Length: 260
Image (cartoon, rainbow, N blue to C red; front, side, top):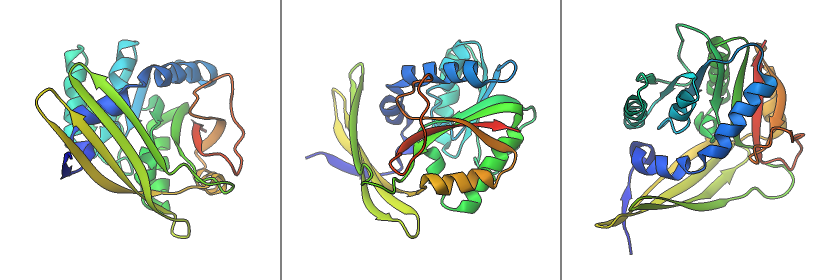
């Protein structure tokens, strides 16, 4: 039986980065392909709101892009900046709120692809985030926003598990829905990291509340921010030549939004 430690998983960036950074190649290739397909003008400067450990930021920097981001977790931002610095890049991640920020110079594109958006607990905060993103992008700039919708036909996936290894460190991750309140548009989820090293084994666990969106609800939200428009939608297969049409069954989606 593993010792269980209740704590914020985002404050353990080494383990978080291993779990969520293991499938980076497919996302990176997808981002580059979307920039090529849908970008207007040169795309050189990129921003990631809710950047966490910056698992894609430093790789995009290695591709020649100028990158920056923000996140509420100071440990994650430190981890992100330390890695950027190790690879010879500037420490461009900042502790900040994705619903309340301004940038000194507009970005050509931005991305947020792993459900961070759903941590915003109200329509007001979600709209503020989109308005901030519109303000951070130049005209024609792109924002790739990926997360799970709530299907209105069929049952949503309510449990996921996956594992990752780096050297002698192994992490088994599990995420499951504890409660789904469709009327209040709230999903209470629990998540655990089972951490194994040569000298110790333990479980990190905590819970979080996600706001839920059906595809019509998300369409209404985007429509309420006139500075952004949807140019295409994809799923988590990340096939740029296979866009998807949203339907009542749709669950995972990446919106490609463009600054008008």
